[in-house]
Image 1 (cartoon, helix red, strand yellow):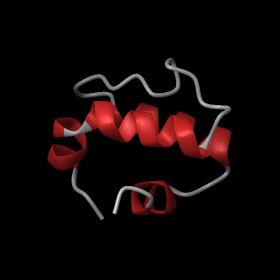
Image 2 (tube, one colour; image 1 turned 45 degrees about the horizontal axis):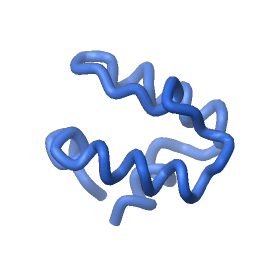
Image 3 (cartoon, rainbow, N blue to C red; image 1 turned 135 degrees about the horizontal axis):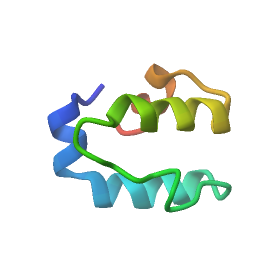
Image 4 (cartoon, rainbow, N blue to C red; image 1 turned 45 degrees about the vertical axis):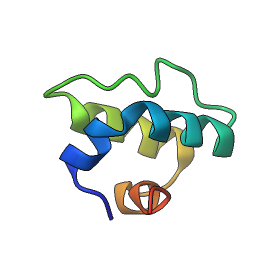
Length: 60
């Protein structure tokens, strides 16, 4: 599972993969802001009905 630095460094690519896999995600859902990562993961968990670990495993 990628760590926060790996996710941040590749965010644009990962964001594209997420939007392809989950069409219901919007740019607002995938807004990455330094220091607000947990807020973003919370929104994604709620919208997708998956755990953070499940979501991050999609990046492997």
